[in-house]
Amino acid sequence: MFATIDMGGTTWKLALMQDGEPLVFAELPNTRSPEDLDRLPEALGSLCQRAGVASCDGIGVSIAEFVDPVAGTCLPPGDTHSYLENANLEAILHRLIGKPVSVDNDARCALLGELSAGVAQDFKDETVVLVALGTGIGVAISARGDLHYGSHSSAGTAFGHVQIDPQGPLCACGRSGCAEALISGWGISERLRERQGFGESVLAHSDPLDFRRLCEAVRGGDWFAERALEAFVSDWASMLAVLIQVVDPAAMVLGGGFMQSADIFIEDLKRKTLGKLWRPQNMPVFRVVAEPKLSALRGAEVLARRAAGLAPRPNSAHC
Ligand SMILES: [Zn+2]
Image 1 (tube, rainbow, N blue to C red):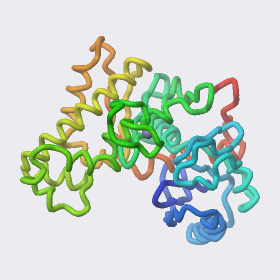
Image 2 (tube, rainbow, N blue to C red):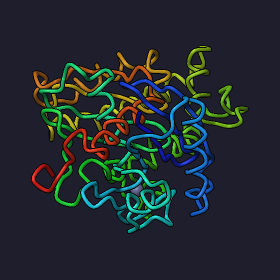
Image 3 (spheres, rainbow, N blue to C red):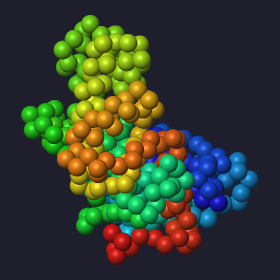
Image 4 (cartoon, helix red, strand yellow):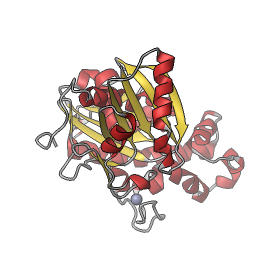
């Protein structure tokens, strides 16, 4: 039995996993303080009790931070777990819970999860890119089933902070005009307010003003919302075309919260992405994650097996 923790920006999801499926599940708030870690032993103990098992064999942890998976540390700059910057999370959790622990970045865990038990299982022998579109933008790359880490363990992780418009809005990273500031969940409400015609849209009375509300307005036939979504899709397509031309994947896996509304934009996104490729024959197969909440937990189960010594861990030769 393997315990998994998905440490996200708003909540931490905990599950005991077996063969890609959660047996028991719990959620804790991320209060962004070190005391959150102290709640884990009791929460995991309670999960084991509910599942009727004495303990777990290993723990896999997915976290929305830069991670060195060989050392088990969170790398700077910290985001929603800034108190863990430069901390050895594997060692901290091992000390707290007394079980072997393996940690990796959340987008990389999501890709591992989709390769092991999700929509990318038939691409294990190929090159795959995962893009998570939601509150932020996460990117992960694998080749023949192995994650690609890069020279500083951050391949793909900073892709959301590629600068698109130097005159654009200030980003959370302190620079201006990053993809995240323009076309991710937290940047979208400002972009909508700036667009001409906002005052005549149903979105002008929407609180909160977010991607879910935008999609509801599109489904309701709101002309402004339709044009705005088209513009966002065009920008996402530019981003995907860059990744495709750099990495040349066989499959592009799309996950994250935005994909809950994929039915209203996925065909347009594919068409626009294809239109932006210099070599259209390089267009990969697109797969939309079927169960976005499970992706990272399934990847964390793979990590937990590694922690328990039941699967090889990544090492510097793989990175
Ligand atoms: Zn940025």
